[in-house]
Length: 177
View 1: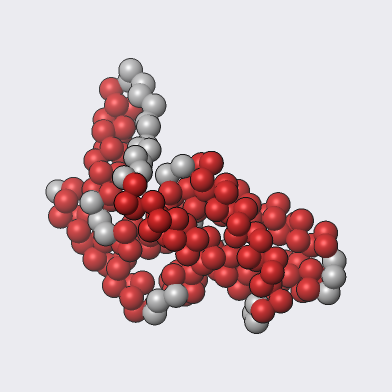
View 2: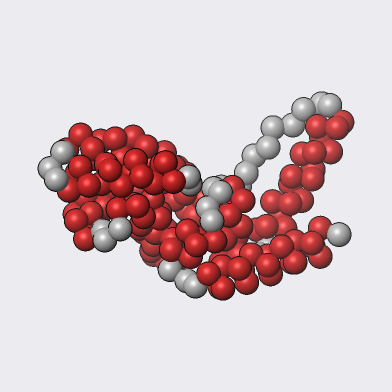
């Protein structure tokens, strides 16, 4: 995330803390879909993800005054969604929740079919990684978070993030050879 977005978010947080209710609406507009995608990645159910994020907005509203660094709003909100999503998975673990798998559209074009097969192999290899490695890969490559931001979101050291990223890449290299 670039500094301009962080500054704008910080301004909105400070405005909301000062009593401007419209600022919260803008934060919701900026982040609701992103938080839903993040939760959905964990729970593999868009409706459940929506419910989780809705609960997270309640937490955010009630705890935003305790946010010390307004520049860290996005990481803070992502951390809340991560924890709530993981809590949901822990509760559902014993129920054998059927996870929805990625569906890739196939084209009759052979080169497109080869690409689709490569994507399937990569997705399969990623699913074989530990959950911690999957999360770090997703946040780093798909969501474009920095190592420091991932460290904040997951509440682990930067060294742990680097280690998980390294081991995930190494395992993917050997699996895909």
